[in-house]
Image (cartoon, rainbow, N blue to C red):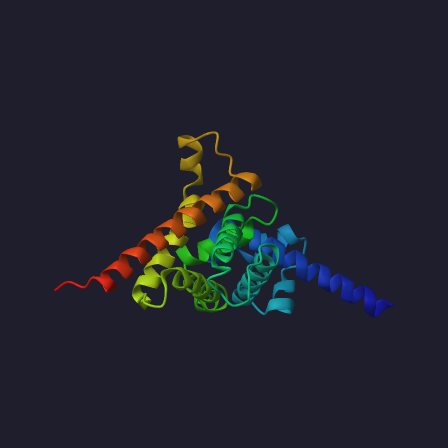
Length: 224
């Protein structure tokens, strides 16, 4: 029984440290965050950092992995093959998932804020973040783009289009305060985010289809 109680206490302390560290790292960044403040918020002894994570860097890496896992579980995207039949739905769902993740103002809002800060103020953990989270998502986004543009689309065109689509949710993420002043009626709550995702998907698909028509026309009517 004693071992069971100790395991529960250890697991609870571990979880509190991850949550507290995530909030502090998201607010202050890795370099400005202090172990002392993290432990104060987690109601844990400073020695707990060494016990569970070895050091501040180990804690930071563990927090990033924890945040990635939580974001994936809360806002999942598809994993099956992209086909012409499902590409529009897949693209819509990917955009909606990313918008909900970056615009989340709930208790877990620090997850996406932390990852955004890592991209702005990169540490040694950035390579792992790109490989484990951003690259798989971006590859799937490119698959959606290619499915709409058709097999004749070049890699550079596909990549640029994928960047253009992703730049739209990045805009809403980083310009939320400006948007609230330009349009006070736009609250960006859950219902607003769903409507916004539908708009971005419709807007992006229209552009991709127009590009395909233009490219097909060029192929059918090459210049003399």
